[in-house]
Image: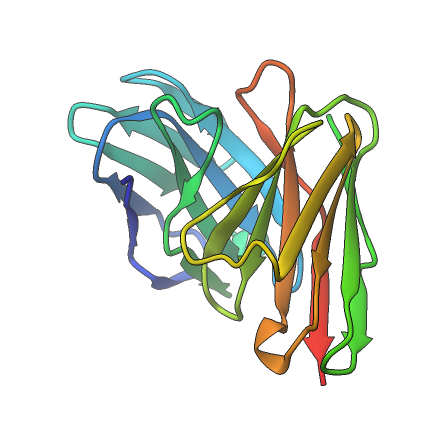
Length: 112
Length: 115
């Protein structure tokens, strides 16, 4: 059974700073996703990572995947207040037709 | 991008009543939809996988008789919470998988409050 863990659970950072959220998973996963959730809202898809070494960037966010280490990272560059949200990673266990297991989530608070 | 809608967005009901939540894929066909629930400040937990034209697959610990799922068409899945109780109060989110199968698109969620 796939287990997905994120750390930290909560992150408070100042605007302009850089930081990384880590996502570890326990068994082989076909793919790794990153989602953003604003309070009271549903999930917004950020990245889909499908292969070892995959790196994707959108604005101040960059996600990478290391399947050998079973690790994905979400790097935040020069954070701005608008990035405040909860970020989830999710893995898809091999051969389970898109079933996703979500991580615990990282609540990011960017302060002025 | 693909759009998934849910209805209603918010519902308040009395204990013992049943509530139906609809999930629609608006601009694509979804042979598979997923139902999740999320408690405050917690992660999403998969409840069941809904397959068009066949029975849903429930995750361990989810009562299939309490959470009835029907996927009658390629664009509509419904979740009915039967005989709802206060502990069923939660945020219910559906998602739909596109044909390529690489991405799940999430609905806006339904907040259920059972009094």
